Length: 71
Image (tube, rainbow, N blue to C red):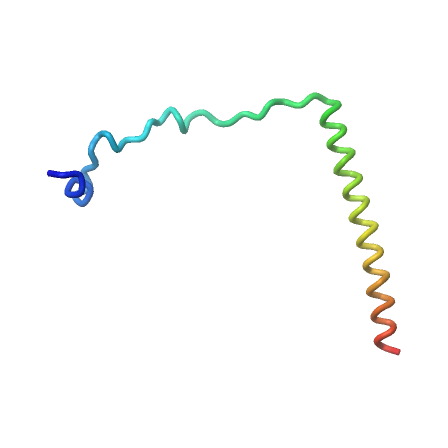
C-alpha cells in the first residue's frame, strides 16, 4: 500500500505522527517589576483620560451641529 491508500483507509503511517513535546510547553512571558507595571498603568490611565476628553469634545460638537440643523 502507498501513502495515499493508507490515508484513504484511515491508517496513517508512523512518520505522520507529530512530536507531542512541542505542544506541551506553554509560552511564558518574562515577569515585569513593580515600577514597569506602574508606568504601564499610568500610561493606560493617561490614554483613558485623553479618550474621555476627546469624547466630551465630540459630544459638544455634535450638540452644536444638531442645534444648527434644527434652527
